[in-house]
Image (cartoon, rainbow, N blue to C red; front, side, top):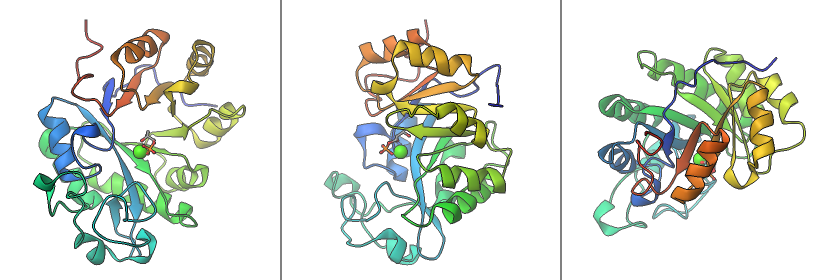
Amino acid sequence: MTKQISTWPYPRVVAHRGGGSLAPENTLAAIDTGARLGLKMIEFDAKLAADDVVFLLHDDTVNRTSDGRGLAASMTYAQIAELDAGSWYDARFAREPMPTLEQVAARCATHGLAANIEIKPCPGREVQTGRIVAEEAARLWADAALPPLLSSFSFEALAAAREAVPALPRGMLYGRVPDDWRAQTDALGCVSLHADHRALDAGLVADIKAAGLCILAYTVNDPARARMLGERGVDTICTDRIDLIGADFFEG
Ligand code: G3P
Ligand code: CA
């Protein structure tokens, strides 16, 4: 059975990749930006370096968001830490590194931020990434007020995370929501379903809620659309536009 939670404990607005579109994604500077604008929760992408250090990066390669070249899975974290992950966005972020999950947990604690850790495995490393990210998250957030919410597009990664640390809440991530979403979320013991907001018509939202799951919609950058999704019953939206859709957007 799908795990039912009576009250969704997480904030209703989440900064996508740390600081939305206002800072280089998946960096400590992005997290600081989200916190400075009053956000209470951030989403970010976690994967393994070749030496199994958990760090933040969206893509399989470092090419788009740093001054390096190559597959993340073939680089040690010491090599990754040397790269500049800020200048591609703006010169004022020069030398901003790709942080480890440990550094991110400390920064979340400093700012009092809840976390949605998207497990983003490099191809072929789904099980190992799910297990190690869950174990690290449980250790690093052991004293946090809210447990980190794990999510992934990879069923295998979330299954491994569940096996490693069953107590951490999980949300299955989808672009288009497949017909067997009930079976998948049941099998993973999910508390939530995370989907591209364009897939979330009113009927599907009602069905997901009736199944006892909470809903996180990404990536919602239009305030009118965010309002409509909230009225439909979506619990939380993930946004790049934390300047337009702030922490208190759904208040009052
Ligand atoms: O978790 C929601 C969203 O971050 C998933 O898409 O590609 O931005 O990681 P992406
Ligand atoms: Ca993500």
